[in-house]
Length: 376
Image (cartoon, rainbow, N blue to C red; front, side, top):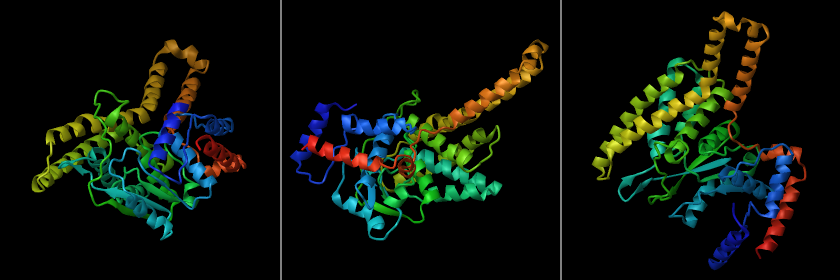
């Protein structure tokens, strides 16, 4: 949480750089806290702290202020320039595209970065493409091809036309970039990619944290895989077998190891530093396990139900409990578990919010004006 003192430190920092058109979005202050409270009381669960919650309100503010297009840029960029913002917005503002996404080189100090994209996402998408090509599942294949068409799917620099943004939902975990692209696939009619920077692009790098699933690249990988597979299974209707994730992990490892070999050859040819042992470790011990864990999260409840029902039906000691409805209770719990397992942490769309709260944008404008006076 940001304190009042911290909010005013930000105000003074902005003033010291003589930045003009800005707004301090103090999410924990009395003004915007009231907006969050109004949303939650209306049944929209916008309570989980983090980037997704803050980003969602930022979009609402932009819509309320009458923006034509809205852009999002990661806050940890170390090499940001104004020209990059112009490039990002150009397709949406000048060419009337619905959506624009940045791409850039991830090479710093002669080392190749972008590990999650190179070693997890690309090989995973290629593995799914191979599988869906074999099974001729065109609906799934179309989505995978769309995602593969982006040069850097995990870049946080995007721009939206306001008409698209109003209909978008957003994930609130590390799967936000993939979830956003899936939403764009479903709802946008025109998309563009822009080369954000000709120079190497630098921002904060995540730690591996291979022993801690809730941190670093490990957490990011798990969120990305579960977000993608959730979209395929729930939203697109993919039917999976008991061995689906095990087979996928095997294919993924083969594809990823082939990618590692190519990166090693490229690095050697281009005189770049490359630690093949670490990259192979990430593939085998971190990213492959994230696929298996996602499969465990998404399928374990059903395997458990099947085995338990088979067990109680094969022992006469359970007969009187079965007569009293034990099997029905087990199946009811399974249905409840299914709902919770597949509930991705995500926001609703602002179109849905304004439909239920017709005055919400007026209320946001009142808070914006109050915050301007507070930080004047």
